Length: 617
Image (tube, rainbow, N blue to C red):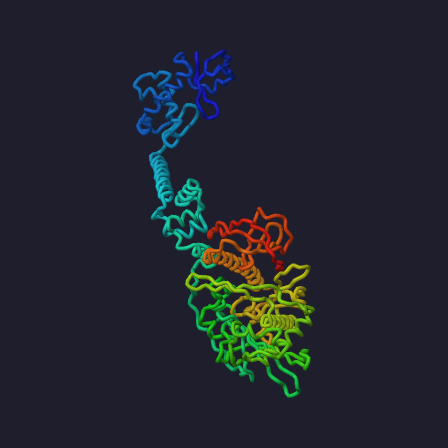
């Protein structure tokens, strides 16, 4: 005698060895013996053998029409043997009864289980919904297979075009397009961007990197929302000076300018003039909303995305030939360039010239300054500013340092890049940086002394942080440092400028101490500024790799930084070389340039040996 029983959600058949009333000792077809509770038994039968029963029942079940069974069973709860008798028109054999049981068990959307061997037909509405769901999944699986095959063949599916950015930068794995893309990537061994590039979906590798940045930080595009033009500040006195700025050739957001005036007493008055967009629009305005959202101008080789619209920049940039609103810090100096007194004013300043590094770098050198030689505009004024910069540097305890290191300028024209060197810490750099450090420190101190909140940069124990507390910046050697000198390009500078305007006018501060608006602006700026700087570094690396390809560089000099990290000598590109022998930092070596991947931004290279060069890192 044999029996059919249920165990762990499946049906099994075995031969009875002993009937113990409430349980059975049985032997499975493969020889295993076990104890089965009587309550788990669904059917006792003499033939066929257990293995044959299950084999034949499964075969018969496969031939049954599930939908017809569902139509036959009625709406009330029923036993599987009852349905088997109705279906076959007679008392079912063991194989027939088991086949009905197996088929209903395998179709839970058609038959709801109500107990061992007992079922109830699913309501028609529920069944149709379940069947529709299955059909939808089947169609989706077919679509995934079709799209994956197209991708593998190098063809972009039509469904991909409207959602390329999401697929590249923020894929939703619940979407069938992403499933198809992942399947194709696995089959081809290519990354998502490389596969889509092969399918012609990426206009260029440059667009891939720029697209990610825009997708993350400019989801609504780089255009500007509607805004009221900035107001022209009324009643500002015109300063009795003519100022000049010092910037790169492509700078349009000219935030700072300088003036030098001789005093009758033999002293000198130096003016540090900062563009004042804070006089043209207020916190809470549409222009503030734009600046608050962007928080900073974003820079990259060949392009920038400004924080403010061109109309706002154009109204306040310190452009040559215009009298522009400015916050001015005047320093009265003695003959040794010591600061006798200083005063802050809100005024209009005539801009006499926009000097550019390209026209000054060759002539405005330490050697020419010491010898009094060289021919360049504003020679006397720049000489005074140089002496003042040295005095300010000395007062901070930083005197005596030469150029910090080499900077690199990237110029991209018609998709061709030029990379040129420029010493950081040159006389022009020193003039601008020292006067900006002094202005930011002086105005930070003024705000603190008058009880106005501000956003400061502080440094202690080597760690730089942003804070609303006027704290020491040990690295710069100043008591406090509040970014205030670039209000056209950085939102914290604009916030500090609004506070400074209020302090100088004796008005209530737009931002109270520890206000949520001030704290959130500081937090958001810090994160955004770091992200923008990271993107700029990434794109500089991209253009360095492009330069290697453009110039067909196969071998290049490099210098060991540490361990297996190298820096190329001609361009600011770092690379790791696993095969590099143990060499001290600063060792000059030659490498062979290998594979360049403009999507992953990687470079493979081979060590070719040391070269006779002791260039410093």
